[in-house]
Length: 319
Ligand code: UDP
Ligand code: MG
Image (cartoon, rainbow, N blue to C red; front, side, top):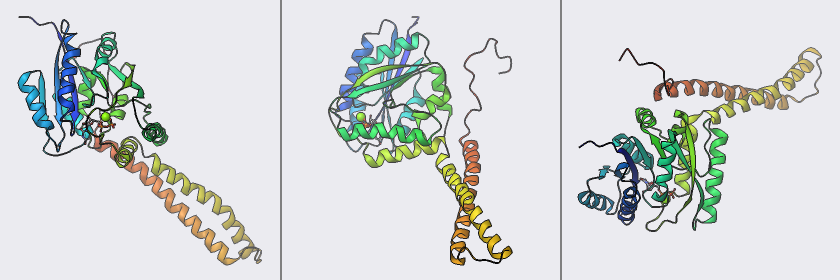
């Protein structure tokens, strides 16, 4: 039988989500069931070394429905790696990835798919508000993006989490990027292509605890910054230059008065202090230069594609 339906892959990482997995699967089936006239779906759940019965829950669901697929990590590799594994296995014409705690509601999948059908290769989502989120967390996520954007060369918007739809061609580009320090929120905008944004209200977590605490967020910010720029080290280099610029005139003035005019307006101790500052400036600015080399080495090692072609008017002769 001919099947003209498009396949939508859905990918969710799951860490200690035993109670959420069945709910999530049910919700996805319901939402995708409404679209079954035009779309088939597969739902890939990646168990990221959970300590509870998440894997059993996934296996259980996959026995009931072959469209539900499970991957089980040997240990906890982290959210970004779990997402990557799921994306690697997705076979769909488009892939939607979201958390498995129902905070990012599958209800809006149809909207994402509609945007995709209308020509967006990447559909971002933007969280408007999270039900019952503590004030501190709201504040944190606001400043998190401000902070990352200050240092990073890829701009990331507040409320844009790992909940997106990607066209297959974008997916292939992203899965071909094998850098270890993975920060999908930065990689997706880096890859480019037509994009649009769908807004949604986030839900409250029903079961289980969020595993992102302050420490994890900090380390997330760190990898967001380090994956996309050497700005922190560059700033140190600028500081070094500033020290040189400030200390040089004082040194010249001191040198001239002591050695040429043979008079002492500045004490030798003071001048030694300034000389030290000058040397410090030299060291810091050298660090800045080294940072630039590291930057280049880092990009070489990551081995990202040099460019990405979105479309062309001719067929490839060379294969
Ligand atoms: N997660 C994961 N591995 C981890 C931590 C989290 O796969 O080490 C998953 C988790 O199951 C959820 C998603 O990543 O589906 C987001 O985690 P969480 O809900 O704790 O983060 P928050 O929503 O608070 O940002
Ligand atoms: Mg969550």
